[in-house]
Image (tube, rainbow, N blue to C red):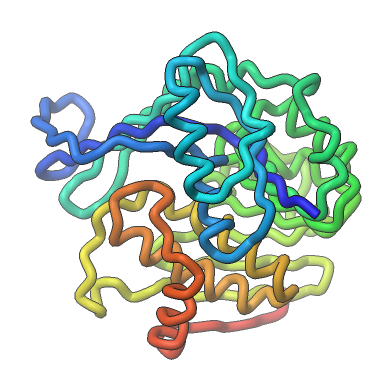
Length: 306
């Protein structure tokens, strides 16, 4: 069975600036690199590298970069038969990285917003698992309502509020926002968290790790982050760390059905990504296993009741 990722495909331009990036100031930047990115592409690539098989990406690309994007995705082992080509410009992301490795990202959606529910491939609804990322809300709604598989992971960023779709889910479900997104979801929601028992919520907290809330089982789980400074590792770019967490978490949970294991692997993979520049540059499974053996004792894991 296939595993689908539905999300944006961008072409990233990565710039370094000296000092701390602030509004209203002029900065001189250095172009570091360019390459394929976007939440959908990042998650799909990270899943393949983490060991998932038959991963297919559902997203949009413009004719301007069709060959570049498709060729790269194929080289990473991502299925591209449902990457739809539109007569327009591929989405762009300009990633500005300061001295601390913190990223400010400016995106131009391009053809990403041209996807509609009519483009949803039938086999996406029959796949064993799906990651629904930052596709347009109407497309996401149609997928959630009709999906017949066993597992769904939602990580739409600021594109739409997944809490509004929880009641429509018909399978085991996870929602994976970062702290800012989670607070926005709650501010715009009419119910408290106890109303969303259909889905487990995993809040990604960067250098503070991640927290899982499972209201159906009445438990929470805190998993620490990889202590990069303590290990003497330099943070180059936080861009894509959340995408990597989602992709690796989904892969390990599909494989093991062990939440603690999935969170541990995802936390370490996201930490390693921060030491690399490209937004999808996650360790492959063999390297990840070595890192788990090396750093497992340094990652705190605490469970408590809700």
